[in-house]
Amino acid sequence: MKFLITGGAGFIGSNYLHYVVNKYPHDYFVCLDALTYAGNYNNIKDLENKDNYKFVKGDIRDNDFIDQLFKEEKFDYVINFAAESHVDNSIKNPNIFADTNILGTMTLLNASKKYLVKRFHQISTDEVYGDLPLNRPDLLFKEETPLHTSSPYSASKAGADLQVLAYARTYKIPITISRCSNNYGPYQFPEKLIPVVISKALNDEPIPVYGNGENVRDWIHVHDHNVAVDLIVRKGRDGEVYNIGGHSEISNLEVVKTILKELGKSESLIEFVKDRPGHDLRYAIDSSKIEKELGWQRTYNFQEGIKQTIKWYIDNQDWINDIKTGKYKTAF
Ligand SMILES: NC(=O)c1ccc[n+]([C@@H]2O[C@H](COP(=O)([O-])OP(=O)(O)OC[C@H]3O[C@@H](n4cnc5c(N)ncnc54)[C@H](O)[C@@H]3O)[C@@H](O)[C@H]2O)c1
Image 1 (cartoon, rainbow, N blue to C red):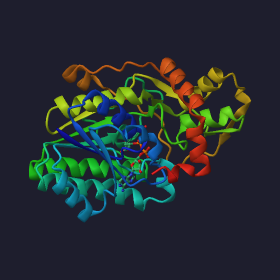
Image 2 (image 1 turned 90 degrees about the vertical axis):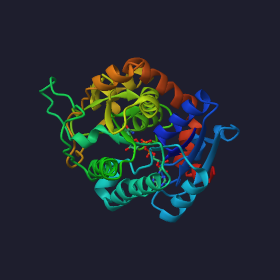
Image 3 (image 1 turned 180 degrees about the vertical axis):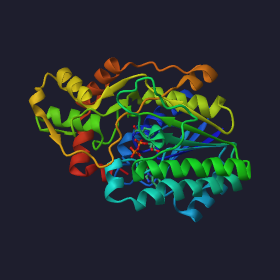
């Protein structure tokens, strides 16, 4: 089987490729990535010598290029990780989020329809459901929870989900969608909370925390997310949405304090900064559907996962330094 993995040089996509290229030597994986500021070829450089893998640089918004690629490669499966993914950037520059996340997804859907792809899988996010109150631990996002977005990022991801569902209904193309909570793990671009905190703490720099740090996220290790995606793509039912969560609801402040404690650093590094506009309060996922239907279970609890993640960033400080100096842009 031949797979197209878009956004494979990013955080989650590169972890996915490491997992599947090694696990399925008889399948073939084409990684397509535009190498935007968030795409880092160093994340996937070690896959270069694999016989069942190749990298193609290109943009999912480029209709002619995508059409030609699908025509030549005859993909069986398409998994769309590619996206603009940083909420803060979406507040400063919303248009590119609609462009990449909605129109880029539609370009892939058009080609999947034309070249009769067996399954188009869209990597979505729990952020499409909006947020939950902090004082109602009984409430969780289910697959039927109405979409109710807060940021230009989440609105663009919801727009993409609606197009995927519309193509399934109108053109009968086989699709699945997964909506996952906040990921952490190796290769996460140091603009997101956990790598920012680790990197700044290692250098004894002030650690910015939005508002009073009370916002709660349901943290999941990226490997658990990717195992779930692989199960959905291979065994999930056509047309279905699957939630994926980590059963680890933790406030941002608690995350920061856990990392500081693990690194033996003082909490005095914490610096509370003006809150993000429209900042979602709490995300919490009900992942019972994928657990019951596909037998998925998360394997990392946050305490173990964060220790392993911190170790990875300590062992790979060159990886972060290359990003800080901009050298990573010349890796491809
Ligand atoms: N990070 C999370 O916690 C999280 C949680 C749930 C869902 N998601 C979703 O998972 C997916 C991957 O997220 P991530 O954190 O790995 O993001 P990321 O920003 O680390 O990676 C995105 C990748 O997409 C590539 N890309 C961007 N625009 C492109 C374009 N026009 N054409 C081709 N490639 C392009 C970038 O170069 C980059 O390699 C996204 O769809 C995101 O919405 C992320």
